[in-house]
Image 1 (cartoon, rainbow, N blue to C red):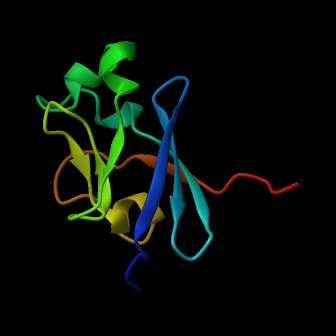
Image 2 (image 1 turned 180 degrees about the horizontal axis):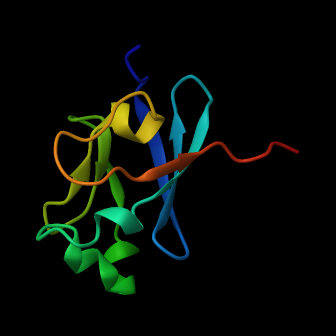
Length: 94
């Protein structure tokens, strides 16, 4: 299964990004398990973490320091190529 396009990303505390996909699904992605790696370590700074955005060309979540997450990992259908996996959950709907 291939993940749909990422539409929006909103930083939540602590180290969680709420991701809205084109199919209407929402995932809360806790990236705290990734923060030991060299690229992701900078995201421990709340100001840097809050700069999360969607790269419309790559259709994924990115940060200004070069950190990014594959849409399949964000959607929960794939594990990252190396290192630990983020924790992905589906928020309850009202």
